[in-house]
Image (cartoon, rainbow, N blue to C red; front, side, top):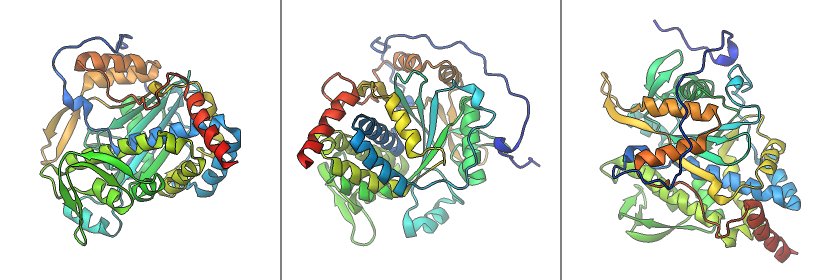
Length: 405
């Protein structure tokens, strides 16, 4: 019988050796790479990635306008929810990263409100689960932000439980086991944890004044008073935005289309947030924070002072220094028990571990682009001018504050 998993923070032992492999070379992202696209390496960016971008951009803007920082800090501390169950993250894995490197684990879940129990009975899923998994990596030199989504059906070793889907770590052992699983899989250290509930969509889109998406397929969602979403450009706000990202029964490949729809909405949210109408309106930015913070929980160490410190370190970032991508994965696989899972790409996983450890994520992404034969679609370049985000966002915020006066 397998011995129950004891979280790393409660045990001691020898430090395991780092995996050995060659580090990927720094090669140009513009290099042509052949015809094969290997779309499984570019699976849909899940919901939490864009929320992470919004948080990063908002905090950078706050660091530039001191008057505005105080207002954001007040809102943040009043609305912040702390994860009580999570012990200190300063454990024996800290040696795996440089002293000033920051790794944040983002976990997104859809509580589905009153429909939660019915959903779990229909799918056979028990306990808590993570619908979206994301690692935000900020290198020691603050040269960029790398937001990597991790496929929830990835088949990995869960410490103390054997192999299973990566999102099952949360249901088996809570956040402690989820952190341990990611740290072992990537051979890295997690500094902070943030959880986000999809319910936040409703108030977030309202705070932004609605968002527009190009819907590729017409469908209806909801049992009572269903919403109809025609093909083409549509406006989403409040409850109809939440229904849009939740719907799965209307599609033959339910989960894949649902994640696609989440991506459409989150990209629309990012575009709306980065528009002049939002960035030049301090009250709207505060409304966005007030809308999303009640649906977030974070570790005790991620307080306003810590976040502002990170933001101050990143004032020289440009929009194209923020990268989103999906962790490379292997082929779909059916387990002996009949579960449909996705196997890891062991060669790429080894390169990823070494790149994280060597602070060479830019080189890793260059290599991914070369073997995929395409340029990365995950760089945000909404701002037109090639100047530091602090300058561009600060100018917009300054204009908004001037109008308030």
